[in-house]
Image 1 (tube, rainbow, N blue to C red):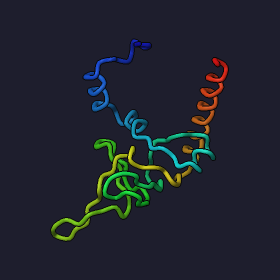
Image 2: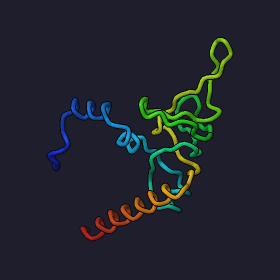
Image 3: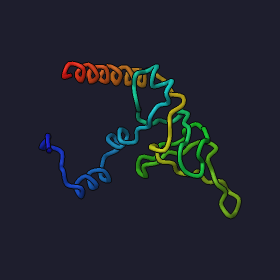
Image 4: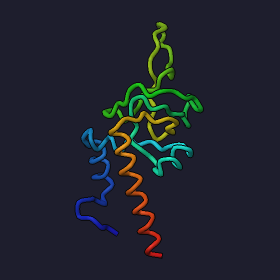
Length: 136
């Protein structure tokens, strides 16, 4: 059942909105889940992926490899991880693009803004949890 007039039910419109999304919205869509220790520590399930985060790759040819995110390429919906490369025919290394949904954040790159974001997100999650408890 449709709840908001601003959101379309149409599959075609959803796809169009996804691929025409501005960078600020793509940032949020390109979120990555946290590992269990970070999830318990910060009380947040996932966060937008960011340069200098350490991630573990869960799917693909580079499965179970860990590395630092070198680039978040929002235009192509991918991230590039340090040491995850393949060699071209002339021997030159090329970064392999990895989708953020196939990664788990192992270590967060924390600064003031990121800490504030985590604090806001954990408060919002706590409010959601309490709201669900009150309904039951």
